[in-house]
Length: 113
Ligand code: 5GP
Ligand code: ZN
Image (cartoon, rainbow, N blue to C red; front, side, top):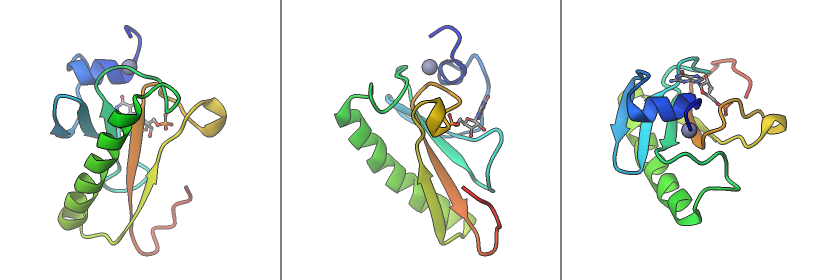
C-alpha cells in the first residue's frame, strides 16, 4: 500500500525504533506512546484489520506478543500490561494496517485506556 505509514516503516522508507524483526513481523516503539515502553507489533504484509488477517498468522502474532511482553517486563520492570488491538474508526483505529499494542502499566500511572 503506497500511502500506508506502517508499510513504509516495514520497508524501512520511514524510520522507527525497532525492537524485534522476523520474516512476518516487525515490533516497534510507538511514536506517541500511551505509556513508557508502548510497543506495536506490525504484520509485514499489508492487511487492514482482524477481518482480513490470516487466522494462523494472527496466532503466530499472539505467540510473539507473549514472548515480547515477557522480555519487556524483564527489561522495564513493570508488572501490568494492556494488550490492545483496534479495528475500524469507531473502534479507535487510526492506522489501517494490522497492529497489536503492548502497553506497559505502572503503579499509579494514571493513564486511561
Ligand atoms: P491505532 O489507533 O490505529 O490502534 O494505533 C496507531 C498507533 O500508531 C498509535 O498509537 C500511534 O501513536 C502510532 N503511530 C502513528 N504514526 C506512527 C509513526 O509514524 N511511527 C510510530 N512508531 N508509531 C506511529
Ligand atoms: Zn500497510
